[in-house]
Length: 256
Ligand code: PGA
Picture 1 (cartoon, rainbow, N blue to C red):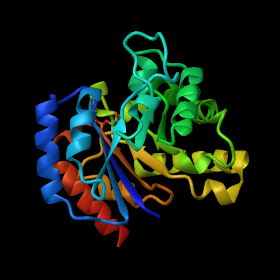
Picture 2 (picture 1 turned 90 degrees about the horizontal axis):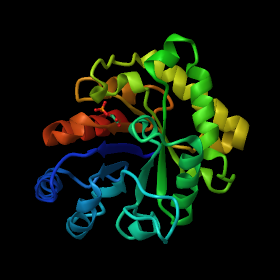
Picture 3 (picture 1 turned 135 degrees about the horizontal axis):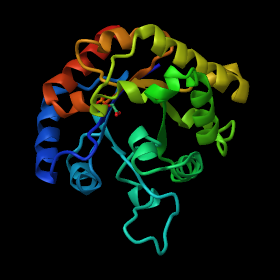
């Protein structure tokens, strides 16, 4: 199975800065067949980076989109407008859920829209600190997973990537606490079990599951060696080119 390393740049970098970053990283990266490196820049950078990218080394992801294909939706961009530009799209990131109040229904419609456009959705799920404190972690994981996948068929689910990102571990939340490998492992096992009861064990085994939350070169190895974790989604550390490259190298070492 491939290892997936996703850099979520969030609302950072100008078009120029994004382009310089890409130029530099393309020179540093080798062409690893078993590592899928993905970056998610701002919408404005997708087109220029699309012209510059070497798709054998890096793929592009959208950070967000609207679920309808075309129409009178001022200010929105649809996933079908991003066809040809991106291979992946992040859906349901906790910042979208909590700051922009996206619901499971919005998220399910986006997952379906991405699949319709043959773009792989990266469905993010994860509980808040409060939810964990009150013992609701398992319920939140189940609700967000089932909510996001409600319209996804048996044939389609292998095209969906799941990212477990506990909100309390995301660096930008200020008081982030590092997730312990056994906490990540328990969540990933639960996700795999939910997928098994929805789609059967054979298919559930093939679904890519990522971990995200304050990952960096110092802890990437520990997360990547958790059974069932197929890669990482990286925020802050992906903005620092050398750190992102280090994590890719670590992923390569863990693989071999
Ligand atoms: P972080 O962000 O690595 O900065 O914690 C992860 C994410 O929000 O996807």
